Image (cartoon, rainbow, N blue to C red):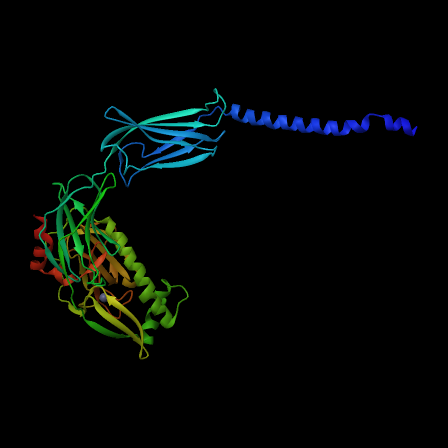
Length: 445
Ligand SMILES: [Zn+2]
């Protein structure tokens, strides 16, 4: 019985079966792989950006390649210009599904002008004939690496700190963006119907006169940039200083109003949060509102000063805040305070459009008018608002009543003139000669 069992061929057949199983598995894997390649009948996708228009050193050609089946194999880009063909790039891939290729044009043999491109992409599929699926895209774009030329028309102009001046210039081609940049700020140049650009440039009081260096910038539609001097002679100016005592009675009187701005705040902390954080937030909003300015000037006269009002707070006053004899804060007063009787009529300083009417942090009840070319006026601490956003007003029209809302210690108007969202010296703008010399006359050049 034992012997018979040993003679059975069942034992040697076991390793043999295992090997067959392995081979079978291997075959399955190969078939599955082949099927994967053969099954991929879908051609790769090409997305080109920009698909039309202009190319430059700053605006390269970006190719986004995708093959969700067998993966990418190769890319070839051919450029055709003036009857000549150039291979811009030829690349092999190892089956990745996605690839982004950026073609730059600083150092190609191509000249500026029209270029016809042929983009050819293949995938790893074995069908047909091992060449893979092929996608080809033809497109025509214009290469423009020539920066725009700026011709400044306005004369060399002195600008005192807190002041502003109009510069006038022309650009040799259509621009995507132009204006003056300085200290991370941008003051837009506005193109007029006759092709000239008008740009009003402020010299902010908080800028460092030693380092403030505005540059006139033009960017063409292909992204080429040119920077030149705006022709401004910047002159430092001294501003007054003031001490302000913050009393508990003042804080108590404002607590309810300020808690709407800083929920849960109280005491001197609440005062400081409004005086620092809300103030900074408001300044940021003013820079944003500048973008809504009209491209043409809506005014032609000096800014109207609040009638029969006394100046109770000077522009650019450097204010030290004291609480119980201790210095707790320092801020610059970026407007002129004007006081008349309580609830006095507030008049539009010049024709314009209402771009803000509502409660505005530090300024309480507030109206902001846009006069065009980045020039705006702000009316703060009002008790009553008589206008709505979008409404047009004429010079001298009543826009509301004075009050004591926001960071204010008595009924008065806080008046600001803003250029590109930056506060400038209101007294300049109320003066006929100053307005003519620095702002309006240069526009006629
Ligand atoms: Zn003020």
